[in-house]
Amino acid sequence: MKSIRLIASFLFAVLVLTLASGCTHLKTVSVQPSALPTGQLLPHNVALVLDQELADYKNEYSRGQDNFIDSLGVPLQDYARQAAAKSFQQVDVVPTVKKAAALASADLILIPRAVKSDISIPVWAWDNDNLTLVMEWTAKDRASQNTIWLTTITANASEPMGSAFSYGKNQRILYQKLFDDLSLKTYNAFQGAPELRGSPATPPTPHP
Amino acid sequence: MKQFIVIAFASLPLFLAGCSTDKIADYQPASPSVSERTAQQSGVEVALDPFVESARTKQYFDIDAVAEGIAILHIRVTNKTADQTFLVEKKDFQLLPGGTAGGLTGNGNKIERSHATADTLNTVGAVGVAVEGIGLIGVGLIGLGMESKFNEIQRNFTGKEMADATLSPGQSMEGFVYFMPVKKDEDWTRAATVKVNLTETKTQQTIALSIPLSH
Image (cartoon, rainbow over all chains, first blue to last red; front, side, top):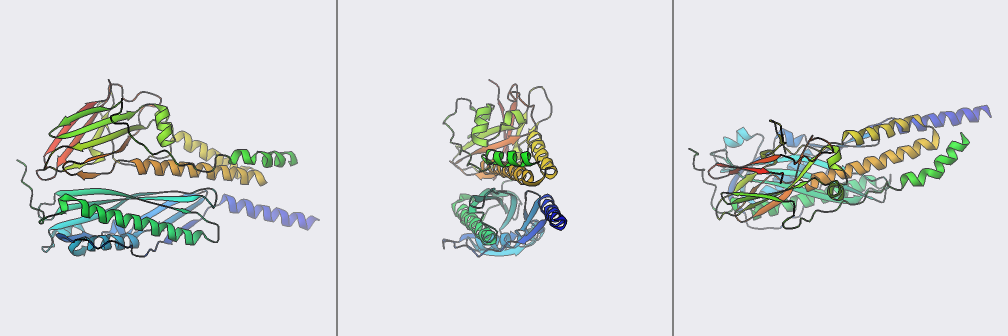
């Protein structure tokens, strides 16, 4: 009887420790390239800046005592490359704005930036995880360095959280949906911008 | 102890009743809203609609922003020119509260959990660690429910925030800009002014508007 009580107390202590202590979960997100329409290529030679800030971007959130860090650098870089390549006649990837400014073959500098991400996690497995990612794209005239176009894209995705058995798979689907939404919205933003159509950007008139 | 467990079991459904996160209402602005203030210059119109009623902030943000010291401003910018593009960024909207020299900038920072609510959450967390057995699980779930709700409120703020963008000729854009901290439980629009700077992309010339919020 004494040993049963001892085992019960031990199990109870393990339960308390499990519930009270937190872990940090690191994950590198991986997604497939999104399907994008094949439209007209915009008449610009672009220096696409994929800097360290984008490469290091993480979606960080907590659930109870646990912290989650999802690295989004690789899929963000892949998405930026794909969206630009599908939209502009020539794309050269550079790591900094400085290098972009020195790239004589480019007339436009394109800078993607992950602004923020938010996730709402439900209590119950059958409710949806809702994920939002905000991306900002800036286009600068290479010669003058002036911003000629700026847009902010908010991508959303929802997927049931799932049980302990399906959580990983559902998370992959959630991120895939997010990048599909992001890619299409970005492509449409490029195609719909009058500032990016027509002849390569002309230098602005200097302000007196 | 036995009594405590029975009470904890019996009251668990009550505690968990609010755990499921409902979708927060989308904002469909009336055109024009009765509380809207507008200004126009060089072919650009800016319309501001301050959310000073707790009921409206609860409806669209699931939080009493007035009581929490968060100023919520709905903004609509219309470019009525034929050939000019303007740069519209949150950082270029500045709230100058009445009677102060300094201003708050709508710089797009995250709206963090308000102090009051964060304290409540921490209290629940602390109690969760202290309570035994089923009580621990129950309170832990309540904590998760509250956290889930906070996350959804945060995500909703992000989703409704005005995007930084260039505004092409003939186009309009709208969204919310948030300023904090403002005085809690007070009408933050009283004697307040919003200063707006918009840059034309070709000439790099800036147009400045000053819009009083108080009637």
